[in-house]
Image (spheres, helix red, strand yellow):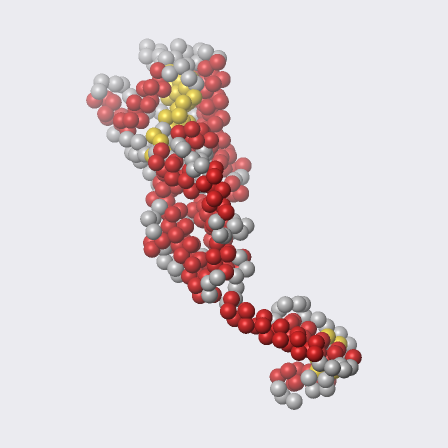
Length: 402
């Protein structure tokens, strides 16, 4: 492919396999250059991905991305610094400048690469690091990106650029006197949308868009909370509302226009969710509900319906408001009736108290105590000291067998 095209243009091409992160292998490859055609430029494009959420990062994740970036760049500089080079180009990534979900290690490697470019230039090498955005033409590193990955990148404000535009940026970088440049195509419409819905626009892009006025943000924050709105609904309506919230947010993460693309009972993984998308959905729901949610939320509750049920619990909205009010009224009447009873003896008062505690324990309102009430004899039984006959008698009474 490329070798043939260059040869047809009159170039003499030699392809040598070497690990640039291995200094000896790289030195051997450079030693094979024909002295009659000395080295005049270095363009270092190597890179590797080992993505993962921040809590999953490990030394292996760092080694995988740093070796082809920084180790190789150092070796190239050490082995060519005495050459009369016209260019020393290091391919970096905008992920190091603007950030990208799941690429903390990759961002760090590219930021280090840009720091090296500054050091090399200060030492006399014409080095420049180009922090590339996404090329529309698929490469070895981007060819495996799915729709979810591309949508995630679009929301960060980076748009895919055609090869012609990317090559024009390369030419501009070679002419620049700067040691580090961002060569990317920005989607300012996406950045404006991000500014309108969240206050997490990358610092370097905030000057390019107009964020909502602080007063408007304050008014939005003062609106009725989700929990308050749901509290006025029935149990079924609450669940339906939260299912719709989950579907809408899930659709936004995947780049769908509406929540209809996400089935209520469909598994998130079947819809295209990966670990990064799951964390993003968790973050969106945490913001929408004001509830602290675990990172494993989507894996523990793998469908919108199950997830909505979890949100109901976290919001403290389990139950029917009308039914709750009626039950509270009955308890108020019971309290009034007990208070109006004349001449209660201590034994009767004790028996009523034990019955109420037993009922509360059955409802899960209080821990099950070691005391139980024998409905047949009208007396309390200490379960820690009761005989077998007393316990069996109590069980028979509770089951209606005596």
